[in-house]
Image (cartoon, rainbow over all chains, first blue to last red):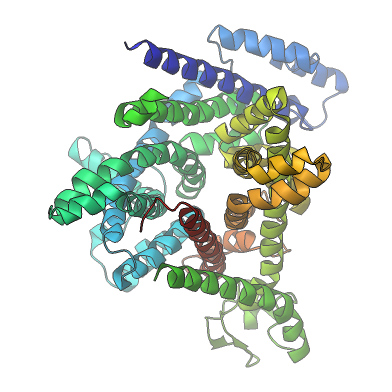
Amino acid sequence: MHHPRVHRILSRTLDALLLLWLVTSLTFVLVHLAPGDAASLLVSPTATAQELAQRRAELGLDGSLVTQYGRWIASVLQGELGNSLALSRPVTAVIADALPLSLALGGVSLTLSFLVGVPIGAWQSAREGTRADTVCTVLTTTLYAAPSFWLALALIAIATTGAAALNAPEWMRLPAFGVRDPAALGTGFDAVRDVVRHAALPLLVLTIPGAAGVARYARQTMIEARRAPHVATAHARGIPERRVSSRYVLRNAWPPLLVLLGLMLPGIVAGSVFVEQVFAWPGLGRAMMTSIASRDYPVVLALTMVYSATVIGANLLADVALLRVDPRRRAE
Amino acid sequence: MKRRQGDARLLWGTAILIALIVCALVAPALGNILGHASPTDIGDVLATRLVRPLGTDGSGTLHWLGTDAFGRDVLGRLWLGARISLGVGVVGASLAGVLGIALGLIAAWRGGPTDRIILAISDALLAIPRLVLLLVVATLWGPGLITVVVILALTGWMSVARLVRADVLGVRTLPYVEAAEAIGVPTRNLLFRHILPNALGSARVAITLGIGNAMLLESGLSFLGLGVQPPTPSWGNMISGGRDWLLIAPWIALSPGVALILTVVACTLIGDALTSRADARATSQRPAAAT
């Protein structure tokens, strides 16, 4: 009975793995075709051609593109991501350091975006065309358009000079750089408080456009769900508005919202690159920037893999979740 | 009721965009003619730098949005930057649109392995966050205006291609297309005269939204120092340049951002209006769907 569904999930997983391979191979070619390599950045400026070649061999950058690709794919299949060329550390260690910080930032802001955005969109959809709806739409459209790095700068200006000029209480003057206060020695609650204070501004920068985007999308899907004949019937039967919203409208708006969750991830990733850069948050985005600049191929490739795996994985999960919440899809 | 709202969005969006484009084209020339507030010449820096918005510098020149750390007029530079930012956005999104339309058309028309290959490439490109791809290419191949436009085009065609492909597949089964095929209309005419005009509805929306998106990406790259290189002003590198002065002179970094938001909002408004117009047409053709 469950056979077609299992089969479908399996074939989707296979597709996802193929896609991941395609993406990483594409990145591999892109990175290796680019002019200049890590070896030329690591040797001294006076190095002879021979020294350069020797360095290249040490780093495994000699041989043709095909040889290098073969070597790389063989090691990846053995679960070996290699060493960072610039940092002389295993790539896995670099990622293990950065991933939790990015996941925490991205995960929390994604959750907050939905928790804030969906109710706003739902509220607007019940008042379509009214002045309140228009005002909200103007607001969400504007906030959604704000580039994250600009928003970051604007918030820093507000939380520092702005807060000082307005004589705001101490707790509102938020730190704008790093994860912990370098002078902070506190443990336990103090440490948590310190991290939360440092995370506040980056989280706001990621959540504001995120929530605005979710609200815009939720409004649209719920307006469409409201147009369905069964909603008109429910209204005609005199079912209270709140019940209509929750049982007849929201339930039909869930599938598109789930898809949105998958679609939003690339945006969160892109946003986090800027946010981590501006706020000196040592996550994946910052690691990406440094590794690209130093032509650190193994790290660049591994990070692209992590990014794409997240995106592909999220889409796969959304797909599988869709099967659960939308019975129509099971029949396909 | 619905109609009117759609039209207001279209009106506002177009008005903002046209106003920005006109200012970008006219304002720098006008400033030179009137001979004040030069955005490029650096004169007596100490007398003219970091003037507040609506303030006057040592020589009594009024600066609407103040001046930057080199005494350059921020508003004047904003309009010069608009040429670059708007130009990159429009050209990048249009090139991506043309590429997407072509690939979508080919995929739908050829079908079979061609279709599958195009879809696979598009899936793969969609699976790498666009910014990461842009970062890799811009850093490795050297930043610059042309690089940015080319990458924007190469990484922005996927959604357009998918929409065009789906629409072409829908249109080609319509009776009038079959009729045209039956009476022997040559393939080229069939594609470009009969099918494509009816399969561009959603692509038009995607391209409009793509302009805003491309401008955001350009500004992001320029902000990271990987896009348009100063002293050529673009809104992104103006924000980046104002970063060091954020706490003393926030207007330098914040003004270009407001301009950027305004442009992206305009594109979004136009896109939204076009979407609901297409939806309205779709529902009016379906008599069963009431309201």
